[in-house]
Image 1 (tube, rainbow, N blue to C red):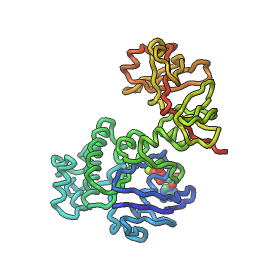
Image 2 (spheres, helix red, strand yellow):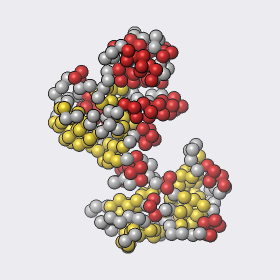
Image 3 (spheres, rainbow, N blue to C red):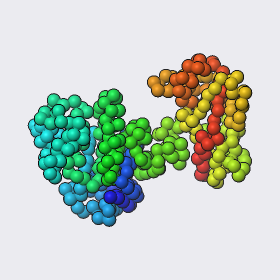
Image 4 (cartoon, helix red, strand yellow):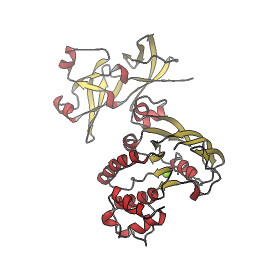
Length: 351
Ligand code: ADP
Ligand code: MG
């Protein structure tokens, strides 16, 4: 199955969606964007819940535009499962099922056997979302659309269900669009990520490309690239451009930068820190000294703000707890910062 959207557009009185071109193969496309950017609109247009103004939606070459909802074979799961409260979990799933033996198969797959005879108000949030998912899969959809299905759940259940979904999605072999405003969910579940802003697509690519090679500042900020600086290219050697920003001049691996003015973008997870002594022993290119300005324990990483040398700029590094503890980092600590050449991404600044 392959889903091909072309020139899809819809105008509301206060909001223009599209035109959007997008192809989704048998993969999970995570649709990531801020609230109000048009993520739900995109799904509603594909499902046929919202009528479009223009464009085409091809599913394996079959035009969906103009077809009623029930003929589109599109499964949809919403933030709040929207189950029938007076029916049991089993009845909710059966209501949609193409064949009744399907229900038990799905119940096993989604670990729902124990709760099949209960009604939605007596189920936990996680169980309700699994029933909603079973119901949408019971229709044997050719495309699956999920609109923030986990966002109403508590963190531990959300993480567990996310891991389960990952395995389930792999087995489905249909195009899946998964809407979220959470970057971690997007990178965990998406084979590719589409970044949505103001009704348009800003960038579509693999999670690692979108995270470390954002095409503009909006994508960079939205994916946690907090280190963004105005810079200028000073030298274009064959092995990569050199860039100046603040008082720093660093070597990059960028070889295709056409402009002189650039935004220097360095993801905090790509910045390495070391004690002054150890790093002095094998001081390499792109090693600079700095002073810790502040730090924050974010659980799985420490976020450390480092005032660089002459004090012209502050760089944020995500530091793993063992490294943080080994270096006994605190405010005022002197520290060496290594910025690997390949971790410096340059975004051309067009006039
Ligand atoms: P997201 O899901 O990314 O939060 P939506 O797709 O729900 O965003 O909404 C995008 C924009 O479209 C919002 O500004 C919203 O107000 C507008 N919008 C959505 N549905 C309607 C509607 N039925 N009528 C008018 N405006 C709408
Ligand atoms: Mg929405």
